[in-house]
Image (cartoon, rainbow, N blue to C red; front, side, top):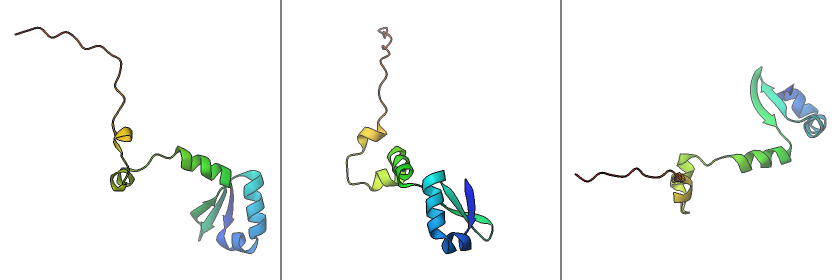
Amino acid sequence: MHTWPVQDAKARFSEFLEACLVEGPQMVTKRGAEAAVLVPVEQWRRLQAAAQPSLKQLLLSDQARTRTLTPVRGSARRRPVQPL
């Protein structure tokens, strides 16, 4: 991943964008610290589709959320219970 100082990314944005589309994600630094990453839209959509909702998002959602919170039951058999 190529790293661009923010002033270079701003001054040469077309080149910055083209590098992202050809080479992949590009890192932007601000005062030497990593600040942001520019990624191609296809990769962004894949990342968004694979992301799980956070607990906060689930609790604030107005849609039914039991499907994502309830684990799938296994197919194991229960052991027999002896009468007392």
